[in-house]
Length: 264
Length: 279
Image (cartoon, rainbow over all chains, first blue to last red):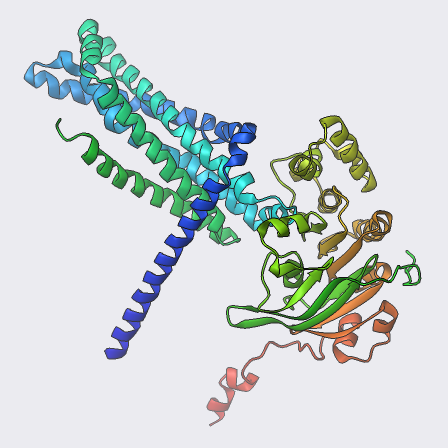
């Protein structure tokens, strides 16, 4: 019994030390990434290339998901609002739900599973096939040349993808609410215009998606760089990226929402 | 292919000097007090069984890992004492060919060879083009410049990686198992290139390999490593005549010897529970 308890305490302590060590290592890695970010901006074509792979190639999933989320919001929103005779407020309800919450959060979750996993797998495979070692031996810092452009591409892409998600969502809500159900078009748009504040709603949404972009891409590049150079290692690093970044997005969303929207 | 003698090699101070080099991974000692001297212009082979620490030695010379004892001195500088900038500056005098080429899979053959030139120089694109084509021509692949790495055979990929390694005319070229997985023709081509490029560039080469036949035809000097220590060294002729049991077993490919066929295990009958059943 005592032996079992002793083993359990040792195991917990070991896991705790490991977790703290990894956190410290991740912090140092991010510091080096920021220090080595000069290349990403001096040679901006490197970052543009990554924006194409992470941002542009995520467009289809973002556009289609945004459209359907907006259509569902249109259906559910109308169903609830019409009970209170407020179906003309459908536009503002769809827009606020998207701009404040669903746009940044769902776009970030989709971005984590589409682009985050790809970034991790690519960097992990570069490590496994010794491409990063080869770069080091050529006196080229892999953090500046490989990691930093991918990190900044994610940070830049995320708010843009969230904006596209919101636009498609509002269009989906319009299709269902106005075109299909027949809510008055004038009140749909005018209430939206009156009810959505640029600074309070839109800017806070943009800040959220910017923060999510930093979190998702930082996790993706770190997991790739830190993955064991084996097939299993890359595979589990990719899974960790999706799980950790999705949870981070949801937790960060709660924290940011509690600061931004407190019924003011 | 003719064997090359040491006669035409310029003997000078050690270009690479390794003294009492130790490296321990976790608690497992990999290298235990290695001493080596490599002179300018030489092609030196480091041989030994799989997992004996040959690649670790190359990584120590390149400064990718730090020794737990001893030092590597390259061109007068102790590698592990250099700061990051000085180490990167020193690495520009080195080139390394990785076991499977390690080509950048998102870049074409041309862009792979041009990579270092674009990273480290401000040369105009027209000059880079000429230099890349010269390097590719040296390895016989000028015509493959537009191919992507996934369209190359193993031998071609190794040759492209070689062209990339010599892109900035390094003083020291390190080869990590350059003959692994190649057909006999590619094997001969790579072996020939290692020797010809070394002499043409006036470089020094270290070849980590376990291919006796191919490497003995092109190298000037050989070090044998076993269980983390240098067990023998000398010219290929010396090694052929060596009476060291490990070298004899290695060169002649004998199944049993100092390196046993069986991994350490319990006695066979005991493992099969035969003794218990007799009792």
